[in-house]
Each structure stands twice: as C-alpha cells, then as structure tokens.
Amino acid sequence: MQALRTAAPLLQLSVQFASGTHRSALPRHKLQRWVRAALRCGPANARLRKAKPAPIEPAQITLRFVDAAEGRELNRAYRGKDYATNVLTFDYQPWPPAADIVLCDAVIAGEAAEQGKDLAAHYAHMVVHGVLHAMGWDHELEADAERMEATERALLLTLGIADPYA
Image (cartoon, rainbow, N blue to C red; front, side):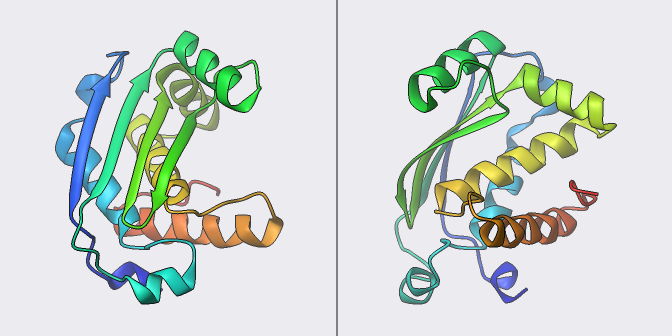
C-alpha cells in the first residue's frame, strides 16, 4: 500500500487519562507510534491527499481515556446512543487532522477479553481506527468499510500487530 510509505506529518499529541485504569499499559511513546502510523495514510479524500501530502502544520490529536460512565454520557449526547462505545472521534478538520478521540477503557478491555486479544493490541487498533476517522475515513457503506479495514490491517501489521478482524 503506497499510502503507508509516506512520512507522517508533524504531531501535537495531548493525552488525558480521565480513567487511569490502563495508564501503565499505554505509555506515551506507544500512543505516539500508533497515531503516527495512522497519520501516514493521510485523509480519506484522495484529492486532498494529493494536494496536501505533507502539511507544515502539525496534526492536533487529543486521546482521552474515559470510564464507562463518561463514555456513555458522550455517546448519548453526541450520537444519541445510550451506551458506552469503544471509541468516539470528534473531528474538526481532516488535513492536517485536528480531533479529540475518546477511548472507553471498560469497553475496550471487555472486547479484548471477549475476543481473546492482547489489551495493548486492541488499544492500538482503536487508536488507529479513531485517527482514521479524524481524517475522514468512514465505514458506513460496505465499500468504505472494506477499504478502512484493509487499511487498518496493513497499518497494524507495520506495528507488529495481528489482523484485528481475523
């Protein structure tokens, strides 16, 4: 995949642990590595990727780790769904991306256990997934979902993480 070989744009990363449940499993250097891997794909819009392959301005990403109560509250307030979800992305501009990405500890840990996945690997997948959403990637239509999943698989493989959809 050619998009995976491009240099990642500059990154301004903020990390917030409203829930510190898995803080020790999520060191900053790992989070940066996961975010930068996803940024290498660029925005979902191919014309925008060609027009601005390496912005001078940094990507501005905030990763916020929350408990189930805050995750549920945010999902209800912004998506009208009354349950906590694994990741919510609040994207403000696709390129260079500016976004708040909210990750719910309880949901991610539950999914990892239920699916027999390593917790850090599942967090990596959810961070990559959230950053792709921040750049306009989507999975509402089947073709878009297949494209996004293939991109996630390729990105995670570069990080030494097995196919999360297997």
